[in-house]
Length: 383
Image (cartoon, rainbow, N blue to C red):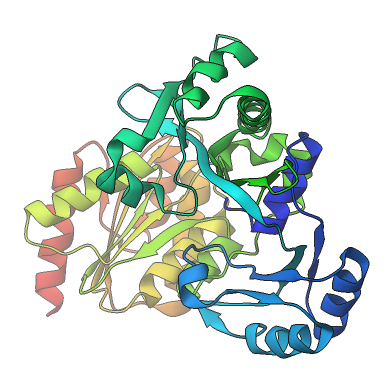
C-alpha cells in the first residue's frame, strides 16, 4: 500500500523526523487558510501516488495569496501520470543549502533491508545509481541487530558531511530506520533530505509503501486503506462474493478450482491439450451452495467460454454443498456450455449423485488431465 506524501509525513512526524510546516487542502479556500497560518512563500505539492511530480508540473511555489489561488485552481483536477489531483499539500517553502537522498528498501540479493544514502538529493535513485554509482552509499540492515547512531556515522560521512551536520543527519536516518520497521514498510524514502539555511534538517518529501500483509496489525494505517477500483464488472462481482477471479483474453474454457495451485495446474493442463483458459477462479474455503453458484454464474458470463471445468477437493469445502450450488445454476439457466466436474473428498458420494442426476459428467477418481480431456470431448460434440 503506497501512502500519499502528506500521509507519510504524518508518520514521519510521529517518529520524530522533522518535516516542513504545512497541511493538506482540497480547495483554494483551504489552501489559503493553511498558507496564512504558516506564512509565505509556500510550496504547492500535488498528492498523487506516482512520482516525477516536479518534472510534470505537479509542484509549484507561491509568494502571495493571489498567486496561490491561481496555481491551486490549475493543479486541482489536473491529470498527472494518469492520476487526478484531488488534494494538495501546502507547505512552508524550505530553502536548502544541501540536499541528500536517503532510502530503505529490501535487497533481494541479501534478503535484508538496505539503507542507501547519497549527496545527490532530488534525483531518482535508479538514475543516480546508473549515472554515478560511486555516490550511492549502502549499508545492509540486519533485522536482528539493533542499529545505533555510531553505525550510521560512517556511512553518512561518505557524503562529505562532518561535525554537527553529520550527527544530525545520522540521527534522522536512525529515526527513518525505526519508521521502516515500526510501520513494516517495503520502502521508506526521503528525497530530498534538506539541510536548511538555518541549519535545520527537513524531510522535504516522503515515500512510504507498507507491506499489505501487515495492514491488519497497523491501526494507524487501516483508516488510510484505499477503496479498490475494479474495471471488470465480473471481477467486481466476484469480489462481492468473496471469490478470486481474473479474466483472460481469447479463452474458451472457464476454470473453477478449490485452491490457487489446483487452478494453475488446471490451466496448464488445458493449454497442454489445446484449450485456452478464459479465467482463473479460486473458490477459497468455506464454500456454500450460494458461493459455488455465484462462481459458476460468473464463469458462464465470461466472454468466449464454451466449456467449464469445476476442479475441487472436498477437504475444507463440502462436495455436497458445492454440487447443490452447481445444480441450482443448471436448473435455473440450462447453460449451453459443457460442464465437467472433478470432485473428490468430504460428502463426495452425495455430491456425485446430485450432479449425475443433472447429466453432468463427473470425474470421480481420475486426474485433472482426464477431466480436461472429458471436457474437450464434450465441447467437440456440441459444436
